[in-house]
Image (tube, rainbow, N blue to C red; front, top):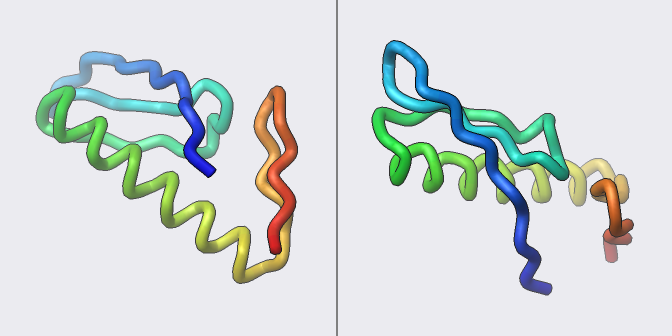
Length: 68
């Protein structure tokens, strides 16, 4: 299932910090916006993988994604 998430980017001394609005625990930094976007995608994939290994549901503010 393909989902869209909203990212919030903040300029910091070392580049940019990015966070997913719907999943605030997904947060990362990158040297530029594109790098930060890629890092957010990777962090989201890692979080989904960890939740599946723990057999936990991934919850966003609008949708509940059951693990199978």
